[in-house]
Image (cartoon, rainbow, N blue to C red; front, side, top):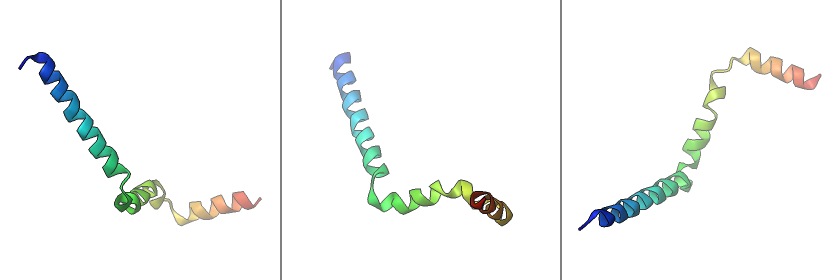
Length: 59
């Protein structure tokens, strides 16, 4: 076994890991969790700020 065999094995291992991460990220089971995480920046917004934003949109 020489260095080129190790490089090939490392490439295959990395490719399998990458495919596993992509499959995990695009899994339909994770959609609700990702949607919840996407809305986290808006979760701590006070109600008064939301009302002010709505008023500005109406004008």
